[in-house]
Amino acid sequence: MGLAKRIIPCLDVDKGRVVKGVQFVDIRDAGDPVEVAKRYDEQGADEITFLDITASHEGRDTTVKTVERIASQVFIPLTVGGGIRKVEDIRAMLNAGADKVGINTAAVFEPEFVKEAAERFGSQCIVVAIDAKKVSQPGEANRWEIFTHGGRKPTGIDAVEWAIKMAAYGAGELLLTSMDQDGMKNGFDLGVTRAISDAVNIPIIASGGVGNLQHLADGVTKGKADAVLAASIFHFGEYSVQEAKEFMSDQGIEMRL
Amino acid sequence: MKSVAVIDYGMGNLHSASKALAFADNNIKVNVTAKAEEILAADHVVFPGVGAIRDCVGEIRRLGLGEVVKEAAQTKPFLAICVGMQCLMTHSEENNGVDCLDVYPGEVKYFGDDLKSSDGSKLKVPHMGWNQVSQTLSHPLWKGIEEGARFYFVHSYYVEPKDASLVAGESEYPLPFASALAKDNQFSVQFHPEKSQKSGLALLKNFVNWDGQS
Image 1 (cartoon, chains in turn yellow, red):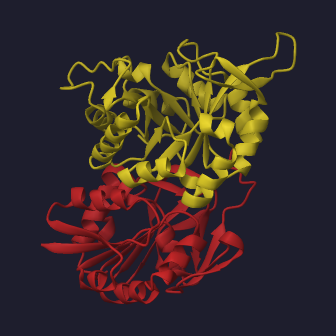
Image 2 (image 1 turned 90 degrees about the horizontal axis):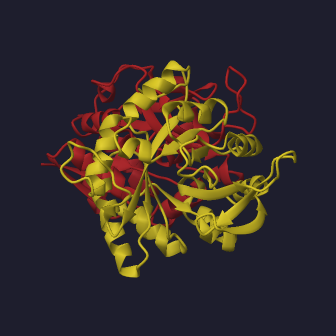
């Protein structure tokens, strides 16, 4: 008996519509983030993460309205990431009903922003997203670096040291995405997940590369993640969140069933 | 129609609490307010809170709401959530020590930095996610909620009341701590019922239908 590991489905949303094709056969509007969030809630999702990929400023107002609509009907924690660059962006999302915000690029370019955000709103609502890629050669000691721009631009920052710094700056949680694995369906990069989880005292969400349920379980048992995030394996109806939780529970992982 | 006041002192996500109350029972009117007269005129009062305790207590005092909170807690069904619950204690260790409202004699304590579970694995702080709540008292607010049901928590500090008979719910991380307190017309929870799906909505519905008698 104790704290359960979490499963977090992630939605990519552009101008208030779910993109990357969610395919639920029996859902009326698979493009509506509210419908999709409700479905995941019914399936037993422990939280929902909503990644806003809207580029335009006008589109951000739509995002706020979407967050309001989700938060009025789905009563599990909601994290909103994407485009969070200023204190006002955080306030707008929290006022709309988000419980946490994900800060990514802004943290890399302006680490003090994380400190300011945590002091202003509390660490519990600040998730720092870390996009890491392995840079060591085969035979060398493992080393991972922070990348920006969807994994294209190296920053020279060591991922484990960065995680320690972000925790010290007041991050309440880290969302770790392995850019080598993202979209590959080969499972998480367990090495970097474990290295960061061992190095910090705040919860780690593993992300990037999930292709089957064993990958989710491995993220917890081998990567020592506190939560696992996945998108496509749930969106295309390959597995339900409920199936994933039962699978992980059967492997001895404490889950909320 | 019953009215429920959610005390708004500028700390936290009051949208969630008010929406969850309205969703749990559509027969109530929810009013998010910092006005003393509105709080004291409501049938039920919810005292939420997130963030650092120094800021929470500081804002309550700045807005002159300390006495209003205490009076509401004496006179009507009263539900404190998360840091709201912590504010009711005498003192908190957070932010190098903060004096709180002293409704319940007791301390708010830090979980610690080197927590280990029984199997030796590291336990992170904040305590974040779904944990089980064991119902140590029978209470109208637990009605219809399974013993050991999971609720959503996010906190690094926990309450330790001097009077252990107040404890209505207990959770483990890794040691047992008070996750709910009950006294007369007051109920307090460390977890977030507004984020705890069915069990949380059931607790909120029980609260708005509660006459304040235990």
